[in-house]
Length: 71
Image (cartoon, rainbow, N blue to C red; front, side, top):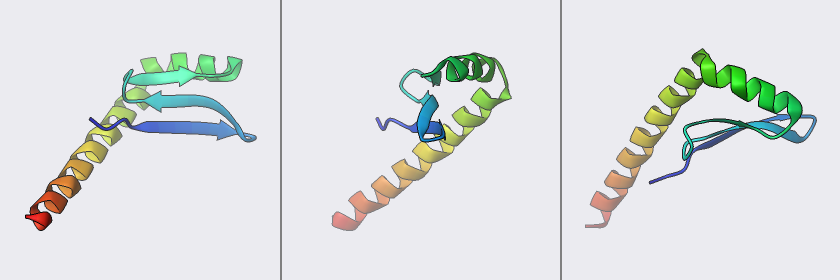
């Protein structure tokens, strides 16, 4: 399916990213790693997974209607 990525930048540096393929936050800096660990245990992950579900359903619906339009 579709890969959903949500990146968090501070001072033009990517510190942390939610990646739907792994289904959790991944840190890229020392600060990001600490945040990723906390966010994966907290409500942030549930919120992100909720966003992911809405995003996927919305895109699937759009894709489906585009397919129907072509027939």
